[in-house]
Amino acid sequence: MITALNIEDYTRSGIYGLTNLFRHNRLRVEHLYCDTAAVKSLSYEHYRGKIGWASIDRFVKSQRNRVLCSEKVELPEESGFTRYSSSALSRRMCENASIALLRAIKRRDVKVALVDISGDSVGLCESLTEYADPVYVVTKAAELYIAQAEYLLSEKGAALRVSRSAGCLKDADLIIAVSPLDAGLGCAGNCVILSAEKPIVRQSSPVIYDWFFELPKKYQEIKPEYLSDMYFASALYDLAGARELGSELFTRCGDGTVIHTRMSLTELLSRRMERRDKAGL
Image (cartoon, rainbow, N blue to C red; front, side, top):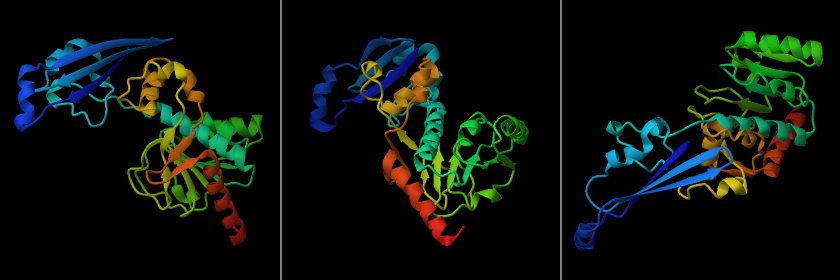
């Protein structure tokens, strides 16, 4: 079950608030279903006084720790509610984007580096080595990646270079970071960096972390209008078993300032490669 909450604030001050004296806060509940997804949408109309969190809690119950709502909704600590958040789908979108980008660039000499501290994306390496050789990995889970490197070398003849140091990133053309970047990568200023989450520390090159795609129509029909497509899709993927969304490819992506299409992202990496060729690197 996915539980979503919207607070509709109709409070008014001064003379405009007099009419609210005769109105009571109201909670509307709607249930929506599609395949394995069941959505409970709660809309609380707030006219005067305090928000009745106890009334809302009657319908939220065990879903308190993963309530879908806008970032603008303030969830009091004493309510016990926690806003749902997950990067699982964003991680898949980031991984899918990296493969699509390498397929589009059509250059085996592209220097690709995967930054995966905890070893969550070992399976991505096999796909990456189809388009780049070698592939560099920066990780603290070296034993996992060394085992993968041995497999790829023996079965595919592909090279995976594993390191605990970020030194290999300084000349990288494309960096894939599946976790939030909490330290500088030391890469070139025109390197293309793809990530699943907004970086904690600013990098020398813009980090593309915002992913957008077209939510299938069947899920559009059950999406509460106050939630964004990507946020709702993350819950469908993570909580409702809609795993097919993990194969979706982005339509747009952004770094917080610039929005890219698939074509413009490909052009961005192409320009990086052209500059590298001219510099003789």
